Length: 306
Image 1: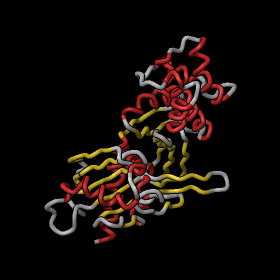
Image 2: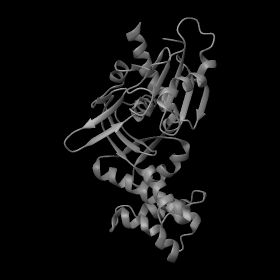
Image 3: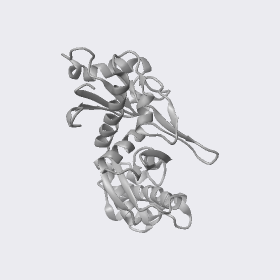
């Protein structure tokens, strides 16, 4: 296996690349941009990626430093479609099914996963890598992971196998409500996170009237119950994150401990919500989880190619 590795997490909205020391897992350099899938045509992907990391590959003798890509880059809308494997799945299964990315030497796309049963149909790309990375970083074989984002994922891993996951459109729905509905109108401008308003929103989860009424309370409470314009966004966030956590508590009644895998900007609100629901939380940085997951996959893939 190469002494260095390039890990790329490429989603719909963002590009993140990490130059990593393969032996220690230490990050040597980082590149970030807003050039996600929406910003590029399919034929632009290899050229954009090469431009972002060319200096990291310069001067290498033999094969260039390997690149491993995870996320929506492997979807139909991305660079090249990688398979989505049926559950249950291990990190080794992902390694065995990586595909070569056309147009750039020694560049590989990690597969996603899918769950298709008579009662649950779901898909995932990128978060499965973070879930396996979180498992390694936490030093456990069994865990429930909460991976918040535009489309939050809750993943269950048992004996090192991903056995179940659920997608919840929390982040995308929050954006839609805040910017495209009447209750969200006072929250159009940026405002600081308000813990009191967020916790009030959390308290509405599971109450009579459901989430559809609770969201409208963003307007009625602004008009008549003292919720300021600067608090409305935090209230709406609390309603939706509270509903997400409540739904998963109902779906997984034995849930006690959660690995919270996310960016620092999301961990504060989710930690409040999970703790209020009586769950023990271990926070893990999403970039660290991505790197740890890809390193495990790349090591096995390199052994297969040797």
